[in-house]
Amino acid sequence: MNPQTLINCKWRTHRQMTGVQRYAQELVGALSKSELAFDCATPIQGPMWKSVIWEQHNLIRKSAGYTTLFCPANMAPVLLPQNIRLVLTIHCLRFHFHPENYSKAFVAWYKFMIPKLIARADTILTVSHTVQEEIHDVYPQSMGKVKVVYPGVSSAFGVDGDSGDNSVSLGPYWVYVGNSAPAKNLRVLLEALKLANHQHRICLLGICQDQFDSMNEPQLADQIIPLGHINDTDRVAAILRGAIGLLSPSMYESFDLPTLEAMACGCPVIASDTMTHREIGQDAPLFVPACDAKQWAQMLDRLLDEPLIGQSQSELGLNRASEFSWKSAADQVSHIIQCKAL
Image 1: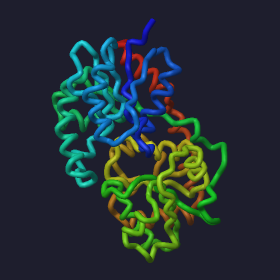
Image 2 (image 1 turned 30 degrees about the horizontal axis):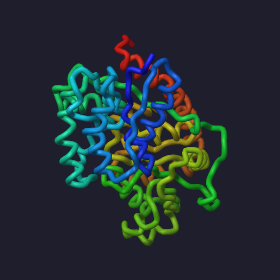
Image 3 (image 1 turned 30 degrees about the vertical axis):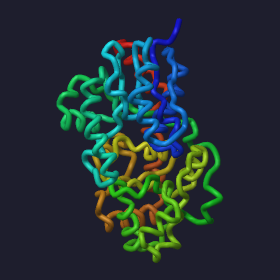
Image 4 (image 1 turned 120 degrees about the vertical axis):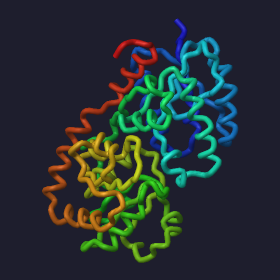
């Protein structure tokens, strides 16, 4: 029997593996082991504008003959025929709440497309109840369509395996995973380093040396280790296992996969006190107001001075992370695509 579901795999053409791409990769991998039979459609590697044209035109033709098109990475063809069911994952509304993080063209495109896709979609998936409420508030027409399916934890992230990284010299270090966008709030950590009693070091995953240099903080050069973007999940896991803890100061997150992955590695987490971090982490992270550099400095010093606190949070994190799996996510998505009751 031919598969009745087609999955939009445009995300495979992206060079860097961001959170959205990793969600799509892990979920599709888990779906391949589920009861759902499906085909994948992927554009030829090329510039972004070509993949957009492919998604809005070519993908429609490829969808003919299928009953369902699943798009796991925010975008879908808006003119998809009504006889084809559209299941779409919308990961976040950062473009709406923090437009300063993107180009004007990107924000304009998303503000144009997202309401149209919400109107066209038969089912909308999202990654947390916090984002579900945001979608309902910003787009009331989405009510009744939005279902929450939590992401999982890749098998690479666990307490067993290598610890540390050759790029990190001997000595304790913290980890930050993200980019330099304002909403990621890296600046508060840099300010915290200046206020702390100890000389803390932070490995920046997702920030290269040139990007850090552009932040004009030469006095912190000895405390910052920019490792750039790392696609290798085994290496990221090893860095997390060797760290004092993960620092997640974001002002906005839809789910924050690195926080969950750190917890799965037994790595304590200090996180900004946001609804998403509370929802996903529950009592495992230590929470600090997002923009209070003094409190971030105090918490960094505290965990270094009192390692038993980190050990306690590590145990809580392991317990919480064990509740998330890509198999569970795939089973839920498979049921939703096949219109079965959960």
